Length: 195
Image (tube, rainbow, N blue to C red; front, side):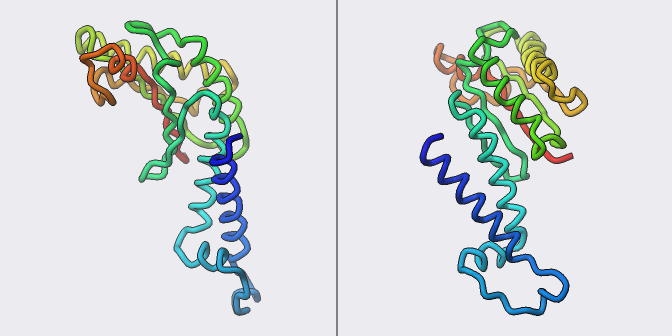
């Protein structure tokens, strides 16, 4: 695990511990807090313990896919977004997951079966480049998302937690006028949310 990831995980664990230590119940609620500055800072903001748990979840998933180049982001609405590198995903006009992508998804499936993620819903969103017609790209992007959904289910992630969506060539992340940009746009994004 790289230093930045270890630091993030350590910070998340520290915040989580501080948030839990700072919660007072019963007779402890009237006792003045004599805790560290970290605990006071973590518990003074509303939802600090929740944020620490969310960051710990994000860091845990990032650790699961760290060697693949995939990234894990916390979205403003609280969902986790996993961006699988485009060169690991699909070839042009194909919905078959490349071998490199299967390795990334194997690690992700293992993580998704862990207790801290087991209840989360998983939405797989497929994208295409702009080559081909819009209608064909809509079908292809859904086929890509379905391939990933089926792959995760075949690795033991409960099928009732998984959904697939195709976005076609909408929402490109790079210009489609060069091979490199088109390759970036042939991608999947995986979103995790609490039920």
